[in-house]
Image (cartoon, rainbow, N blue to C red; front, side):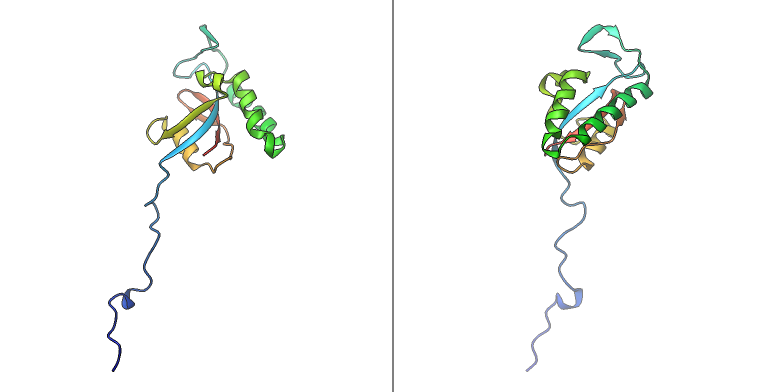
Length: 142
């Protein structure tokens, strides 16, 4: 006697992974922001009464220089170099913690920042990212 056909045979293999089903829920990042005269709030916690006058291009150039410094450091030192630069230059209050934003979920940051952060691999450094807050470098930790 022939074996009874199984209903799944005609459908092929069972699909185990569905793209988009397991979206990353949260990330942990460090960042450095350099504000410019067209930023949403062109002041820094470092000098709250002084308005920032640098151009967006200048802010971007400063971060590109920092990015090169980070990437030319030995891989085991990149995180500490990033933290040093954040403490010295970032214009976000998180600079006091080396730029540490902790874990955050989707919808908590500006769209360009969020898109960059959630598309980085762990320990990957972003290129410069422009948002309404200024220009950023992001280092994803988790």
